[in-house]
Image (cartoon, rainbow, N blue to C red; front, side, top):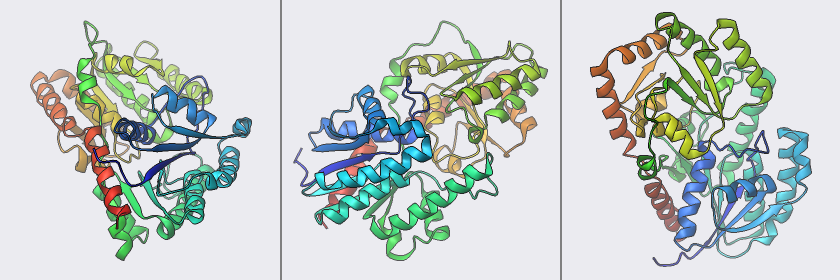
Length: 397
């Protein structure tokens, strides 16, 4: 492969692990690692500006690059808001370290990633910014969770989007619906719309196919993701309670990272319904164990209230699991088959769809086959190749 005419600087400054002993990664982090690992393997000149926390996670993901680590990691003890404030400032002071023909690639559209990218560009005339936007934060008045947190999240993203309008040279989004929302609702019209490139997410289906399941199905339902109110985790307990009323032995597994406080609330709700023998928390598992458990389950249950794309659902589909989820618009685009959608907040209909799949073998097998075929469309190799083509073309313009 012809060597690129530019270097790539990845800004990985917004990553914040709630539990320092674990390195949980979401869809955004996964995309960053998968794409950058492939670029590194192709011989591209890769540097990454990140925190000690981010560095440890990058190394755990076997990402080979030249690292510049932001000092004073003890400031992370201030919590997310405090850490973000100081990370942003310190990263801006490190910006002059990066010179030459440079593509600055931000892992998210969050302020700690965007502001250092802008500082780097302002100090290096031979640089361009490529940023990734995964989804628009819903208005704080309609979003579930603490209103103060939602208020800050909404307006912080709004501010960040204004910076992106002014300074980004290329904008990656993972679905067409998000592109239209940016154009119609957030003012990315005219020439700005031409900067937006749709690049779907991916999975490692070849690796998933190699993993063996347990000898028998362990769980009727499986949830994978961050255990958080926005992921519908409390909805799911309500839904499973309705499932158990019809099927006393139905078992659900919850897999993913959770704060101590959130886990206490979840367990309290499980005990309140008397579901201790029906719902099991597996914790944060290594990747191979996640897929082994997925393959030993029947249905992927995903009552998330908001998603940029849905990697967890796609990985479950690659394991031949039909998905039951809320009717988020993005799912209609990326998962036209293999997924049953239910109106947001309709616990009863959600539980009924689960029970139908558990009882109707013919319907189950049909959706299982469709799910695997849909998942086969998405591959990280394609994502990395597509984005590098966009970057090369943009930089040479």
